[in-house]
Amino acid sequence: MKTLVTGATGKLGSKIINFLMEEVPTEQLAVSVRDPAKAEGLKNKGVDVRQGDFDQPETLTTAFKNIDKILIISTTGDNETRIRQHKNAVQAAEEAGVNFIAYTSLADAENSSLFLAPVHRKTEKAIKETGIPYSFLRNNWYLRNEIPSIKAAMAGQPWVTAAEDGKVGWALQKDYAAAAAKVLSESGHENTIYELSAQPLTQSELVSAVEEVIDQEIPIKKVSDEEYKQIMKESGMPESALPMVVAIQKGIRDGALNVESDDFEKLLGRPATPIKKSLKELLQEVDLI
Image 1 (tube, rainbow, N blue to C red):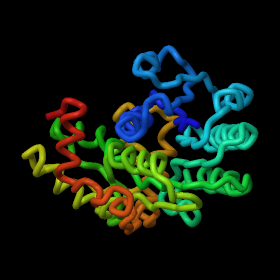
Image 2 (cartoon, one colour):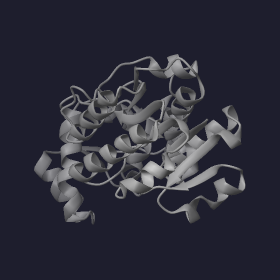
Image 3 (cartoon, one colour):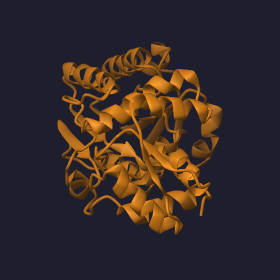
C-alpha cells in the first residue's frame, strides 16, 4: 500500500515528499496534484503521480484508490472555499478506503480566535467523523510569511506591526515538512494531535534576530489596525487581501499563535531550528543574503 500527499508541487508539499523519499521506498509514494505536468520531476523519480482536483471530488476518489496513508495539505483561498474543498478530500478518502489521514491544521485549532481557525476546526471534525485513524499537524506560522517585511526592512523601511506584544511560534517549512514525513513514515501516530510550534516570540524579538542576521538596524513602527491597513494598501497590497492581513495582526495580538509545545522535539528528536539559523536559511533560500 502507498502513502499519498496532496498538493505535492507546492512549497510545503514538495519539501514533505523530499523527506519522505529519504524514509520510504519511492515506489510506495504517490502524489495527488491538480496538474500532473507540474509533477513530471517526481514521476521521473518513480513517484506515482495522480490527478486530483479538490473542486472535482470524483477525481479525488480515483486518486486516493489503493492508498493506505494520506496527507491532506490545507488549500488556499477564502474560508468557505477551503472548507468545501477539504470536506471533498475527506469524503474521497473515506470512499477510497484510506486507513490513515494526516492533515495540516492550525495552532490550537479547537480554541483559536484566528479568522482562519473555522476552516481547520471543521476539517478536523469531518476527519474525526469518518472514524478513520488520524493525525492533526497543527502548524503554527511559516517564517517565510515574514519575507515581505524583511525585504522592506532591508530596503530601509521600518518594521510595521499592529500585533503589539503578541507572540508567534514561527518555524521553517522545512521543519513542518520533516515532522509531517515522520508521522507518515512511522507507525504509532494514530489519533494524535501535534502542536508544531517553535519558541514563541514577539515581533520585537523577531526583529532583533533579523537585525543580527542582516547586520542592519530596523526601526519598529507600532500602529493601530486602521493604520496598518492603510500602510499595507499604500505598499501595493490588493484591496481584497487587506482584511485578511489586519485579521492576522489582531489574531497575533490576541495570543492566537502563542502556543508553547515540545511536539517538534517529540517527532524530530530536536527542537525546531533556532530563529537566527532559521532566518539565515530562509534568506539564503530566497536569495536575499
